[in-house]
Amino acid sequence: MPLDPQIEKILYWAQRAKAPPYPQLGAVLARELYTKASATLDIMPPALHEVRDLELALPGRTLRVRQYAPWPHSWAEPRPALLYFHGGGFTIGSVDTHDRVCRMLALGADCLVYSVDYRLAPEHPFPAAADDAFESLEWLHREAGALGVDPARIAVGGDSAGGTLAAASAIHARDRGWPLALQLLVYPGLSSRQDTDSYRRYARGYLLDIDTVQWFFAHLLRDERDRHDWRFAPLLADDLRGVTPAWIGAAEYDPLVDEDRAYAQRLREAGVAVTFIQYDGMIHSFFQYGGFVPTARQAHADACAALREAFA
Image (cartoon, rainbow, N blue to C red; front, side):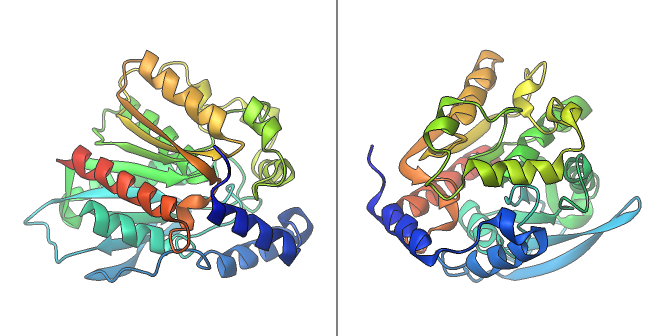
C-alpha cells in the first residue's frame, strides 16, 4: 500500500524541520526533544477517575509507576490490569511521553494501567530495563490484592522497546508460573540483528532510521554477548510454548515489521494464539499519532478490544 496521506505530511514536516538527529544530540538532549515532541500528534488526554504516581522500592533502586484508574476501585472488587512499558529505544521515553496512550488504554480497555518508568541507557545498560520489567511484574502479581487487581487478569504491553520488554516479560511469567491474560505488542523490537528486508527497505526516510537504532543499541548493549540474550531479542528464546496469547500491531513502513511477523509465526508454531495486524501505510511510532492519523485511532480501538476480550 502507498504511504498514508497523513503520514506523508508528517514525514514532509519532519524533513522541513531539519531537527538534529538523536545521535548528534546525545541522550540527555534527545530525551528533552522527544518529551517536547511526543504530544504534538497524540490524542487529547482522556479524563480518568484517578491518575497517580507510585514508588516501587526494588533492591538498590526506586522506580516510578504511574497508576491509571478509569473508575473508583478497591481491593474488595478486583479489576483487570495492564502493566505497560513505554517505547524509546531503551534510551529515551518515560511515563510522561506515553501518558496519553496509557490513559486511552485504561479507558478503552476498562482496566487499570500501571506504566513503568524503567531505567534507561546509557546510564543503566542491559539488562537493567529487563530487570525492572520483570521485577515490576513480580510486584504487580504479588501485590495484586492490595492494589485491587485481579491476579488472573493481568496483561503486559508496550510499544517498540517497551514491546520488547513486554514480550520478554511474557516469557518470564511463563517460566515463573504466573498467569497472564495477554501480551499486547505494538511494533516491538524482537531480533538480535537489524538485517531483515524491511530494515533494508525502510532504513532511512521513515523517521526511525538505522543510524538511530544503532545509536540506541550502542548505549544499551555492553558487548556482543548481550545481543544474543533473549531478554533483548525474544526471537532467540529457545522455547515459546506456553506463553500467553499475543496481540501484535505492526506498521507496514517500519524497519521492524519483518521481525514482528517472524515472531508471530514462531508463536503460532509453538501453539500460542496470535492476532497479528499490519497497519498499511503506517510508520514506526504511529500509535502516538492518534490526534492526526485516523489509522492510529483504529489501532487504539483494536488494542483495547483485544484487552477487553482477554480480560473477559
